[in-house]
Length: 127
Image 1 (tube, rainbow, N blue to C red):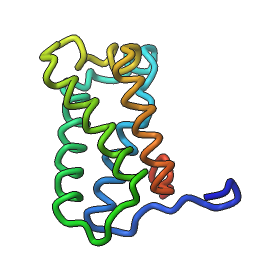
Image 2 (image 1 turned 135 degrees about the vertical axis):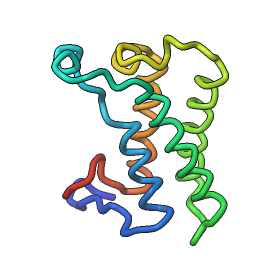
Image 3 (image 1 turned 90 degrees about the vertical axis):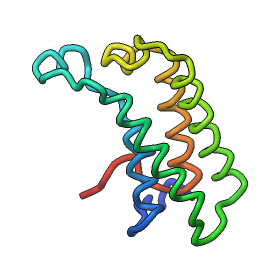
Image 4 (image 1 turned 30 degrees about the vertical axis):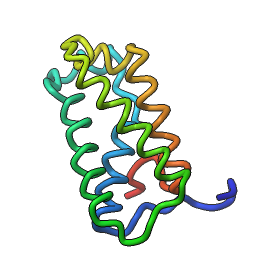
């Protein structure tokens, strides 16, 4: 995709759910200052990972068409990273501060951005 091409979100189904989950992982969390003005989002990081896992599993189990090698590798990289975070059983990884500052979450965002890039998906819902 060239810079002149507009990224298009999937129109529905499994791919659309996966796009929403990946776009959510790629999105930077609110700043600490902005977070102070909102109620804490307990479990938000876990919810992002859970939704990605569910969407990824559903997508893989029901391919409408096979993804490219680059697309599959990018998805697997996100899955591997979030799985390692879950296996670490480190409660500090799941705080709002960790989502902003921990290198693991920065890597998740970078990997998710790569998925969006190789699928040609926009970073966020354009509506």
